[in-house]
Length: 124
Image (tube, rainbow, N blue to C red; front, top):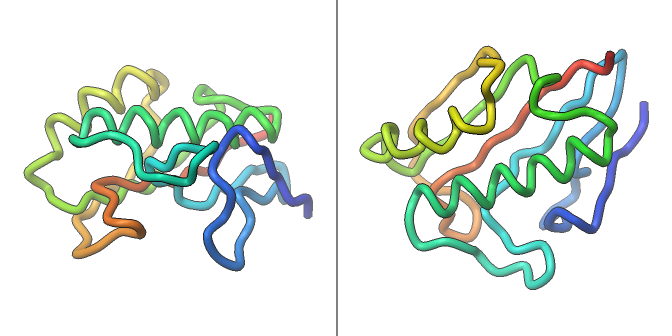
């Protein structure tokens, strides 16, 4: 088991790692739209926040030596399913390999975020 950390993504805001590599897979913690340098929530709407989440997720995946095309599963959490269409527009631009996915509405996310995404990637 290997802990993955990068300063190009927000530091963990609790007792967890940004990602763990184990058994040929990389398991990321959920990423919210925090600016890695300031720790402040970035983006006022779902599209802007989703772009920042994906930027953060990409930084963690890169630190582990994988990328979007290696992702086999994502778990997506939205504060409101009313944002589902706009979220999908941004998500589809990044995850072109169409990994398996769960997407659910939750009542609250850390720091008041509108979206959180976690991923599982395979090391090739």
